Image (cartoon, helix red, strand yellow):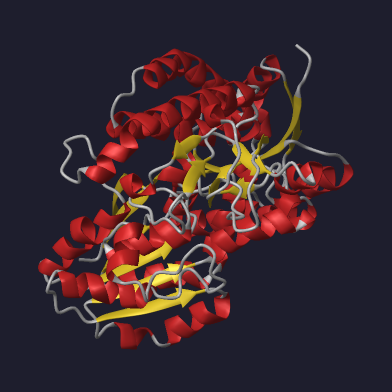
Length: 519
């Protein structure tokens, strides 16, 4: 059998291991031997190896000393250490030097083979397993797309799609395009579901099929915790999708018990509407009617999310609750570090509301910056940037500090985002909104078959800037572009992450309860 990989095995009793070596060679592994550490180092300096098996207890240069020097010479080569000793300090030293595996003598050939496969063939085995698993699941996902009649059904389907998106992205498979086709199919069916049901949910808050929605978050998630006498940190990460939560979750899993759910964000899936609905506990049209000084119209140049703290106060007042709360918005790491330094001030409150804007800022920067587009060219890359930000930002330290103090976190977002790639022509006057996923105006021209059209905004709990205002929402991966300078708009938005419209990614978003493990 032709050798596929070259292995170095260093052991002072190498002559006694001849059957093991012959076994590995029969499996296609060219195995070169050394009976001491110095010879092993010389071989490593002269030729490449795919993996090294190293005896810990060798005379002269010990296995641990040899290991350290190997890591200096060729840190990329995985090392399997074999020892007779079960002493904890030896294991600790070996693990500290980033060994690939640790085996206790006596070892049989199959043990060695399994460890080699784990370290040399893991990507191929993972890819094979992922491909096989997804092929088996493909039919069930198709059935779910066709048979999803409730929000719970859609949440189950979306969870499956995210799971396989993460599985296939971590493995080198050729299944990505097939999954992508299913995601497109799912979003097309989801858009039809929203068209049929959304208005009914808004008009009847007690409808039996109505899901948990943006205005319900405080009443259903925060109030019960406060009623139990718990101090609560309500952390909202703007533009935070369910798949992004999945890559962040392992970073805090050691500190918290996690209760994971999803809720349905309102339309439009933007900060102005969805986040203000969370903090007020009201639909946008109710905010504009009851608190006109706190609602900012579409055509206003004023910031659309500047009144969030007063809106929180109105919700507590409406429910006759005396709650001591703080509100902090984190736009950069300096603000996050300042919050950490002043954390003791937060402990006096019943509720601390903290907003992290990084992901939303990254999403918009990606639209405008060629460099950021390159860094986040795919959903997988977008998730990777999210994970990197969380790992290295003040956000992670804040979560850990809250856990150490024994406080509960309600973690959520106001909406998600979707990567768009299909332009839809829309004509509007100068007062038409600029968002590429939804438009509101009085003189819109469009193909009604291509959009979710709302001619009576009040039915969806939306204010009307004008008496004849119409809202239209993009679905799937569509985005709106004006015929004038059409090519410019297409080039500007194509392949960017946008929000405001209807998709699983934008509307079904994480709502996570984190309880510290030290309680």
